[in-house]
Length: 426
Image (cartoon, rainbow, N blue to C red; front, side, top):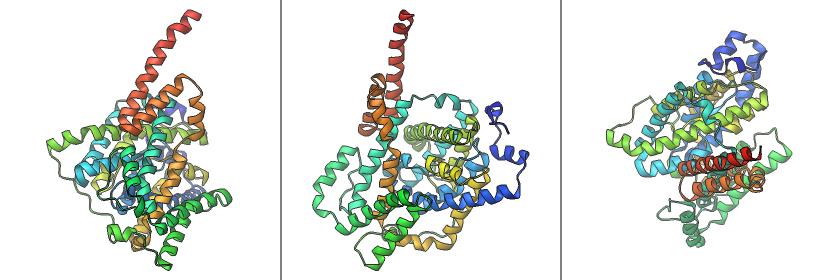
């Protein structure tokens, strides 16, 4: 069995390669068990990311169902799991705030078209060469930004109006609203995070996120705690995937959302290929980067048509898929099928989930997203520290795109400055 290096540049989905090599009953058994495992992880996470992004929870499920299935069916990685990602939360929330749901859907479609174009232009290999310090910087910056955005629901604060803006604006608003904190909400939120961390340490094979959310829902309902729930904020969840529809598009809207679409494209390309690279490291295989970008692009277009949000490769769910001993892209397709089954059968139950529980879940996501050890290591390495801090600070104070561009520019400038010195030394 080859690692796929000889065919890494082909525009051929890994699903076709799997079928050509032969797919057997034992492979199906492994894939369906992996699919169940990943679906259990993806279920609460997809809803939590959607809610944190300022949209209804079912839109997160639409994204994982439609987008996730297409990423696996068309992608250049055997094990990639697509769906909504925490890294997008800030961008999606900002786009919804400025342009509404239709504006978001148009942005996601534009981003999908751009990702497809980048894949067809064979830009996949170039995206993977973004400096490591830039990747760590913007990932850590996003983690801090998401955490700040979740403090409101975590503590049940009352903020009118919602502060929006940068992390500094959010923190200042929360400081001013300190007296409105709800101990019941804070207990549920921190308790959810504590259960997830505890299960991860002592029972790593258990679905910690799902268990923690179910326990939090049971405690809040059983004790009649005064905490806001998904049902209270969004109403009952729809129990079906909607009929595909094209959002209202105008030339002026396309021009207005173009900067956001470029940010979505940049983040989607980096995030999906980084996830595929992690899968390669864990399995010894080689993904097809350009095919992966094309698949991500088509998945985003389809997700928007069904009312979903941004789709990208997700590192945690992809790693879970591999650890569950998945054999092929069928595992990712079936994980979407299990999520669809939940949506059809058990959607009303989601209305009982407390908002602080979802905030506690995202607190864990932020903790995992921030590469703390790598951040500390790079801080001790001179030029890498400068690139890291430039990216991190501008991601926090401005936005993701400016942070990434500035970090890459600083890295390029440092490389140019260093080159004559090394040549002179030779």
